[in-house]
Image 1 (cartoon, rainbow, N blue to C red):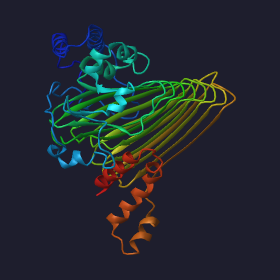
Image 2 (tube, one colour):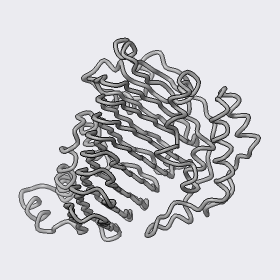
Image 3 (tube, one colour):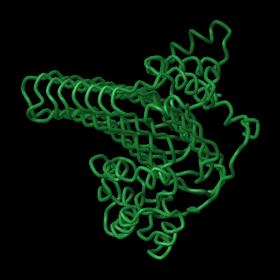
Image 4 (cartoon, rainbow, N blue to C red):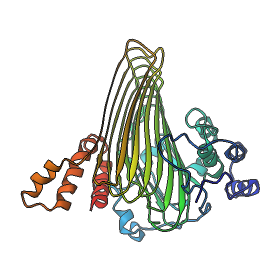
Length: 435
């Protein structure tokens, strides 16, 4: 199926959908602007990955999800994502396009923490949401996919942490694409005010190996001065889901934003992770791992832009490609004029396990300032036959030897991830994909 320029939804549908959710007028205007722009704007720039035949328009937009009264109602695959070391008091489960379960500790509510779905937030905290939603982070008019996202938003989360509030336990969201044709046009808006701290973990899961649908995901993270945000995600959409993922961070003075991303989709994927280090001494680590299999194609970009003086950005990406899969890993460090004393470092490595697999690592450093530090490392290669021979000579089968090599290749990234629950989930997903 070729890329279509027309969405299967029109202005009347968008207006009625917005009215049904009782959305404020300012957001309805954003929807209609997005719909108009989606017909004019180009697709995202993807230089080396052919997306012409990808499915971006075949999906069901408005699919309800039932609430749950007990975790026992969830399938084992979803229950396994729950944090066994916590009481799951800070948790939202989104089932198709609706909230099936939501909980937040009273102590956090009393401190002013807001953790709710994006539509409730638009009505109950309209000024806060309007101030940040697709204004300074991801813009509606960036490309066709961001415009479509604005027009067709059908689920999302708003997390707000007030000034000086430290959230001790991780906040978790599970986005469950239960209906095999249900689309996710999902938005995560996370705002951490000055001197606050929070760890946020999200999981995306689906089971549509045959039916085609779409995931169009945008996350906007604002780490204000002296705050610390740890953002963990495990994306695990099934083969039938074509994914566009755009995660964007804005980091203030003396603030830290740590990304820990497990990019484990089985369908075709475009993923952008961009961080803007706006303040002096701003810091970001962007760590990501991926395993590709089958005949899927993926394009990953990690981009850290330095605007503030003495800002530091570190990119670490490792990918394993199996079967006929292919992936592009772009690592971009950009130091703007005036961001003196900044440091941009990156490492991207790709391991190919079969003759038909393809991988590409593109390190890019763009430096507009003299007094800075920058460096990169990149490698693409196949499994060392001596490694396999050594393992097999000790009675290990070839399949098990490859499995051990994969875990050994990815583990330097996985163990660097500061969120233990994401580490555990990633290792389990990796195990499932290499068996």
